[in-house]
Figure 1 (cartoon, rainbow, N blue to C red):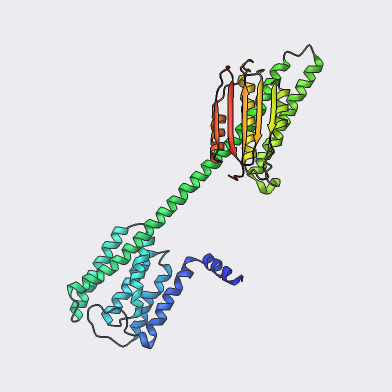
Figure 2: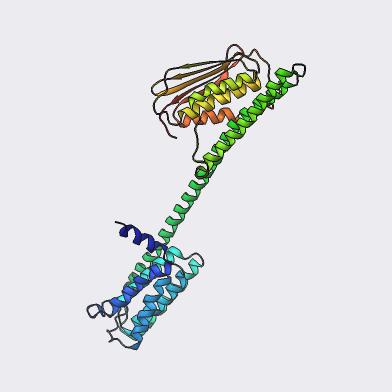
Length: 384
């Protein structure tokens, strides 16, 4: 059972010259088989000649260069063309003549430089061979020479088509790799935004509040302790993200579950934001990525509430059904904006993209009472 899978892998690991050599050896052996002698290409109408010392040279020139047909295609074509000329002028008519279209196919496919020069030189050499054959014997009709040249041009054209196809495939792979890299960078940036922005915003709000608690040491200590806890949670979440990027080192990623939203709400309350939390229904047995997306929606919405509506009454409502998770986070606009640097809008845009990938709906807009409302419907079960 292992052998059929092992041999192809072993063959592919061999040098390309070693893999190309067997075809040349096969043609060389076939040229000497009694039943195949004088069965090759007959160009020019010269009578067949018995094999002699030059036969081995003609066979070697046509067959052995095939070993370098991909590594040195121009050299291969030149040697094979020379061997073919010897073959035809001596009247051997070897099966090894099959090597000429093979060499042309390989040159058309793998030659990178001086392609036009190669075509011009080969055509000139072919014309010279036609003149020499016509002078040595009855010759070939112009139609015959043109027909054989057309067949050789077809081999070159097939190689050129293969080269073009290979280039298109390489370009496609390059674009896929670039798109994948861009997607990974975007995903990492989005995760960093979700983690860093939320925790740093909470720490800034808490630190600003601590400035006004110097007369109340107990409350100041609790606030500073909360700042420290928030920083440690930020470090823990960043480590978790590193585990996600390097699963082989950290034992695999851990996904925030919807059940952790309650903890997220409590942390936001510790930062001075009044939050009302309501959870309805029972989570589905298999929610896929919906749990993480729901967590990120609540996290981003609460972060924005801290930044832009600090102290405003905020409500978080999570509703589970058998097929989806619905999230609503709203503020009433009664608070004040915290002294935190303005956002870039990347967070909401990233949430819209996350929810959209799972086939859900996302909306974020001002509400009628001067506040802000974020809603998301997230289908459960997708593993995107």
